Length: 72
Image (tube, rainbow, N blue to C red; front, top):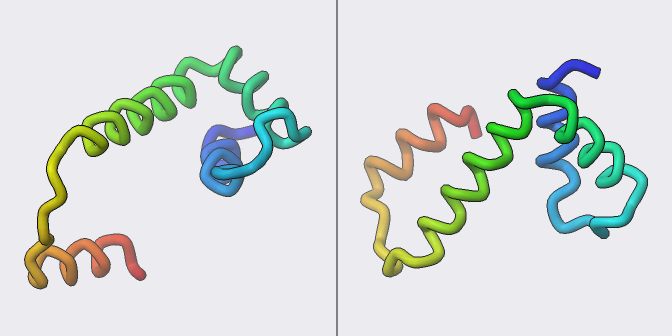
């Protein structure tokens, strides 16, 4: 399975039971794919950094630009 599809699966599985068939399949892929493993590690590190930072208000212009870049 290509990595783009696997990354979509990873994002879709957030909050899912870690022992579900989907999560177990993702874990197996991560064991064999350094690219996806690095992607997941980067997300983990980003989350950990944001957990320790104080809450801050995002300026409206930045918020709009982010939504535009994400095409949301």
